[in-house]
Length: 245
Image (cartoon, rainbow, N blue to C red; front, side, top):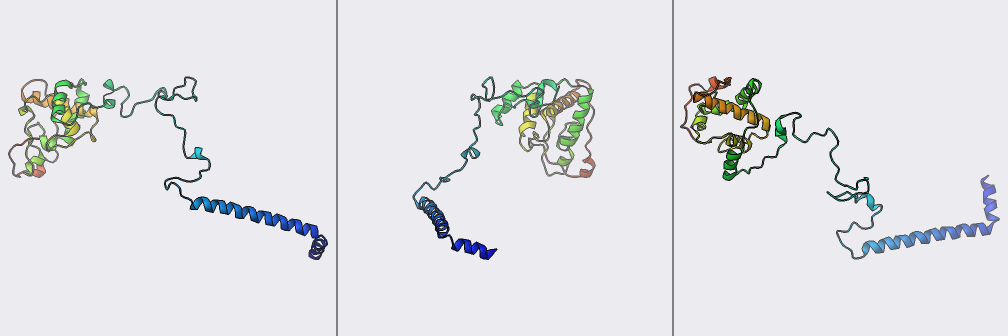
């Protein structure tokens, strides 16, 4: 079979010439394309340019800008409304006023502290269930410094390593708004509790602290006492004079 193919090739000089011509043309085209690419790469150009881009639509998406018109929808609105049933970030369904979804408007400044104290009111109406939850939160986050009764003599203070925050009732003008602001940003040696407590939980704690104050002052019904679970560990330790938080 190979001998037959060789004989056919040798007996057809024109076919051989045609094949060589095609091969030469391919070689010329390849050399020309290589020369063009080499010249383009060696020329002066913007160093930040990505060069020749194939299918640029894959690199640069045609995103619709906010409030820009769009032909994708019949109403031409690029900004679409939320789908039915959407819950805003941080909100609790059926909660009072969607408290947790509200943006806190007061800055972390002395002026913001005073403004919050004057303007903010507790939006919750405390009941036995919410006060029981507040007592649990107070035990977990507050009692160690402020003490079970709010006297500023918690187990951490009893170690003698930190000054007492003082009693709640000794702080003149301590409004609900100031308490909430303090829990949101922190104040003095007290750190922010915004990442540990939701806004609703902070307002419940405000109600609890206000009841502690009323209980000390002889007004209002007694509240469920929070237990300081670490109190015994610090017994007998020295105490430092009261300071500010």
